[in-house]
Every structure is written in structure tokens, then in C-alpha cells.
Amino acid sequence: GAVVSQHPSWVICKSGTSVKIECRSLDFQATTMFWYRQFPKQSLMLMATSNEGSKATYEQGVEKDKFLINHASLTLSTLTVTSAHPEDSSFYICSARASGLVHTDTQYFGPGTRLTVL
Amino acid sequence: KQEVTQIPAALSVPEGENLVLNCSFTDSAIYNLQWFRQDPGKGLTSLLLIQSSQREQTSGRLNASLDKSSGRSTLYIAASQPGDSATYLCAVKYGGSQGNLIFGKGTKLSVKP
Image 1 (cartoon, rainbow over the protein chains, first blue to last red):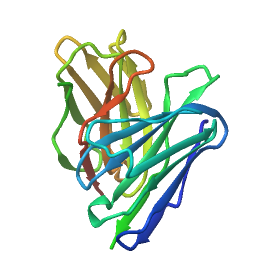
Image 2: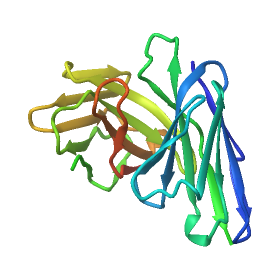
Image 3: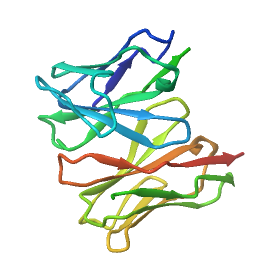
Image 4: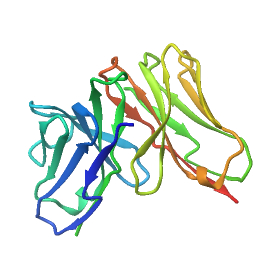
């Protein structure tokens, strides 16, 4: 089956630093990748949608200059949290939508990255 | 506004019980509905996907039903086991195959041995 990986699985950083999270589709090509954020006991909230080779589309209220998304290839998208602050501490989950498979509208989710900003 | 609500927020049952998790959505013009399982600190595992034209889907001890007109879906778990303990998320897709998923907050299930 389609597998999505994320790296790192958890990261602790100091306030003011930047953190990069990678999302990879391991055995399929993903024309579209999604980045979600999940706070404790809350639902997954979509942050942005990225299509390979083009700029990401951000949801209302998500700062595009703070959460930089790059989708340079069909198997890799990165989310960089710039100048991270404690309120950015959350669980970040990526998802990839396959191209070329039977169910092209199916999203496959990564295992998530736990970010803690001190 | 399109919203997805899950009731109850948490549920604790003894092993062996059959149980029902509920999901409701405000806009009935859905494309599909999906149930996921999320273990603590982990990503999502897709359990069942129901297209808008379908009434139910089954996989093993799981059965999901969909009533679009009333804006509801239920996830039925038969003969629950401790390994079923997890958070179950309901997500609705609007806007066709390329639409985005809207998630509920989930139901945290605990099955006691």
C-alpha cells in the first residue's frame, strides 16, 4: 500500500529558531500534499495544500511567511516553521494524494511530527 | 459553515461489548466520508471510506453507515478488544474528488480488558 513518511518524528527547539519537517511519499508519486496541525484534544486543521512545482495554498489564518512549504518533487514536501514560538508547539501531520493509482482522490497520511518549542 | 461533530468525545467500555460512534455533519452535499483511527502520538490509519452514493461499508468487525439526508454517520465496532483503544476520527470531503477533508475532533475509545 501507499506509504507516507515524515522526518523527524519529534523535535524540540528553542524559541526563535527554525525547524524543517520533511514529508515523503515512499512508493508513489504525489501531485498534491497537505499539511495539517493538531493541538491536544482538537481536530486536525488543514494549514495548506501544495501542488508539485507551484506555490502552496494556505488556509485562512495561517501565515505563509511563517510556515514555508516547498513541494519541489513528486515525492517530497517540506514544511519550515520559521522563528518558532511556544504557541507553535503542536503535532504536524502531512498527507499525500496519489497520482496514477486507481483511487486518485485518496489521501495517505504520514505518522506526524511532534514539535515542542521551548 | 461546514462542520463535523463527533459524539461522544470519549468512551470507555469493557472488552467484548459492541459499540457505536457517532459523526454528524452540517452540509449534506458531501463527496465522501471516511473513518480513521489515530493511536496516541501517531498518524492516521484509514478504516473505512463511504462514497456519497453508498449507505454502508464493512471491514471485519467494523461497519460504517451513512445517512446523507440526516447528516449522520455511525461507526459500529463489534466485540470490542483492548487493541481497539484509540481515537477515532470522522472526516468529510466536500467539493468533489479534489476537495479537502474536514475532520471532527474524534472519539477517544478505551476498551478495558
